[in-house]
Picture 1: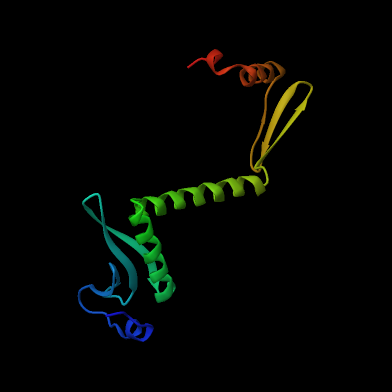
Picture 2: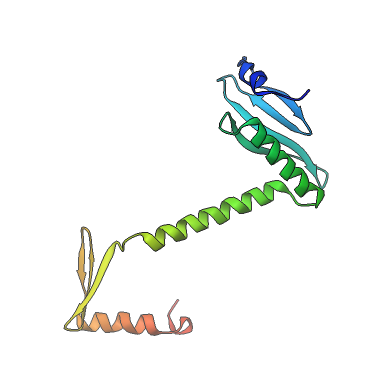
Amino acid sequence: MKLTDSMIDDFKPSAKPYKVSDGEGLYVHVYPNGSKYWRMNYRIEGKKKTLSFGVYPRVTLADARDRKDEARAMLASRSDPAVAKHQAKLEAAQQKQFESLAIAPPSFRLSIADNSLTIQTKNNRLTLSAEQTEAVRAFLIASPNEVMP
């Protein structure tokens, strides 16, 4: 039987978690604390897997069904939706990290005066002698094969 929003709203918590199916592998998992999670069971390459879609009502019934349909389309083309979801999360995290680096102000300041390098952070200051500055410069210019292990 297909679920409705009013049916899902009426699901009450019990002492143990329970599942209520919407069909085609999609179900609501109701926990003792009252939270309701969308899940989908599927098989790929002979292995049973479960895909999570999120918490009801943040993920609506219509959204859960759309995500189920997308996952089934991936399965039809022999792609594992869990792998695609994981890859999408990794790419989003990398993009977020890249964006934060691009807009974050530098947490330090470099300056050179009289051939001495000064590194200034919020709480610390390090000034290298001219000789030390030249050693750092040579190190940074050196190819990776020239740097000692």
